Length: 162
Image 1 (tube, rainbow, N blue to C red):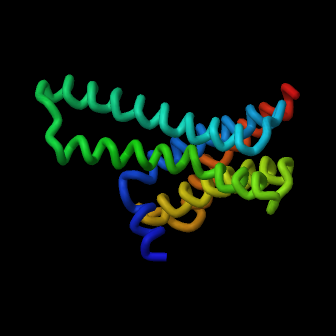
Image 2 (image 1 turned 120 degrees about the vertical axis):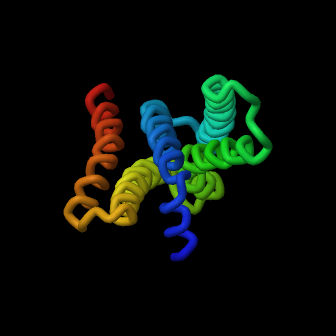
């Protein structure tokens, strides 16, 4: 539990939420014409790497441009830690497709579980982050619900167009 609290109270929580939204969007998009579990895993992990590298690059350029100096090793490590958090958020649903690949879950079940746990993850991080900043229960629930609604909008959009 302490590790979860430390992670949620770190600056990486916003990066995990960002990555989780991207991962959820990819799962929702792939579900329209579902590829085999291995292809979903490759898509999620490939997207995690690509987005994380783009994140590091863009943050480094912005950092160095604003400060008009090169980033130190410590500052670069911080940017890589942020990018790793984005990758974790994007890659999280891979767990369920790995279970589908080894026949623990059905392919359709992996999509359903990935979709709803992604939504739950967004809500949980939103709620927990708000609580750690001193928001009351109602305010935290509203903040968690707010970020979960972004995920729900993705799911709803998929339902409307398919």
